[in-house]
Amino acid sequence: MSTNFYQRALLASDLTGDDDGAGSASEAQQVPSLDALYQQHRPALLSHLQRMVKDPHIAEELLHDTFIRLSRMPALSSIRQPKSFLLKVASNLALDHLRQCQRQPDSGGEEELAEQASSEPGQLDLLLQERRQRRLREAIDQLPPRARETLLLVRYRELTLREAAQELGISQTMVEKHLKNALQKCRAVLQSDMQ
Amino acid sequence: MTREDLTPADGQRDSIHEQASQWFFRLRERPGDPGLLAQFERWKGDDPAKEACYLELLLLWDELERLAPDSDKRAPPAVERAGPPAATRTGHRRGLAALLSLAMLCLLAWLLPARYWLPAADYATGVGETRVVELADGSRLHLNGRSAVTVDFDSAERRLRLLYGEAFFEVARDAARPFRVAARDTTTEAIGTAFNIRITDGRVDTTLTEGRVRVHLPDRAPQPLHAGQRLSWTGDHSVRVSDGPGHYLPAWKQGLLALDRQPLAEVVELLNRHYRPMIRVVDPALWQTPVSGTLPLDDLPTLLAMLERSLAVRHSAIGEQLLLLHR
Image 1 (cartoon, rainbow over the protein chains, first blue to last red):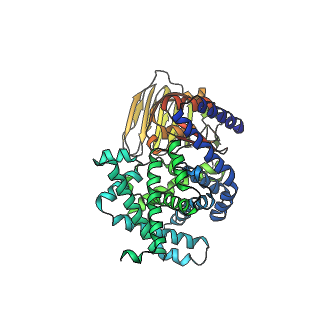
Image 2: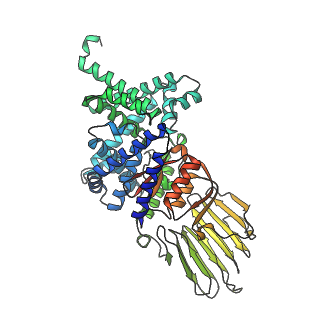
Image 3: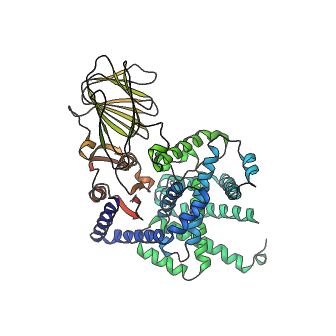
């Protein structure tokens, strides 16, 4: 039954792709490529996720979430070697999930995490991810106010640069400059942390 | 640091990073532009370093979402959020953490068959399944897709609980034993009547078809309803009573979903009780888009065509189990 639905849905999407204008046809092209990524990398991603979370249902859900994230990333179809990147995006989501599981029985926080670090293999990744997040947060806190505001607006409210420019009352070029500046600072902080 | 201290390789790398971020923002602004994509590919060429810089940027952008301060985020519904949480460790965000664990529970509820996690539902349906049950007193219980009810009758009362989802109750008259349906923290009490209760992420809606009911809410006087009226009880403890059609039959009984300016995120939650693949709205700008009209609950292609036509919402199938909605 559900396969039948799915095939009809595919058919419908083909139809709509056909009678659309030129601008949207390109978007329709973007979609099969994400589906192609899914078809090609699903087994590897799924087994990776299952190893991390040890539950096939949750792994499947995290795989969905991975592709929801990927669907928001531009130009993935142009990437020649996407596999390790896909694994990284999926791993981050799995780590988020593992962190939530730990938090459930209202645990004491980092000390406890550190204690467990030796016992479970995933723990080290968790700690590393948290360290990265802490560094990133610090980096954002230290940004010049205007750059910080711009980043928050564009990132967390998912505004386009044009929308952000309107809201902030500055030019689009200025918005882009703030963002590039902010991202370079974040990157620099992460890099110095690695060394 | 003087210019000479900088090795050429470092300088080059930095400029690649800068170029990569420029491309990222340009592509983000116009994701469907084939000309832009072609230019991007020309820039990237065969250079693995450029590709790596671009991907590093995508990853950084993705990771930034995890740091979202609560106030800067649009709050999407829990089911939608179940996957990508953005929690932080600090103490004052415990509330958010609790909320996210709740979201996690919702996720589990979605993933596991009802029998694994429910406090013994007497009657339950899966996605796309509806069911009519004749109860011991002659009342009829109509279960919508992905819904569950417990039934507990004794000589003093007929007590039911809607655990999740939606159900329509046709109550057999029995003046000696009130018929009471609990849903979250509300209780609807009926004598001889027919009514519908629907639980969604942020609300409990009780709609009365005939007869009369009283709805008991925490810390409030019982609220009587007339036929056709709908009471909405939201998580922030506000009540809204609205008048519907004089003789209300829940649209889901006819395989339809009737909507009156409901946000798309909520609509998708209702649709997911009926459809596989699971539908997700990936574009945050669409979450609050109001939807009005009638959508089919058993015809996916028509549904998608309607969404596309009336809301300019596009869809992409990812594998066989996931359907993404975006602009």
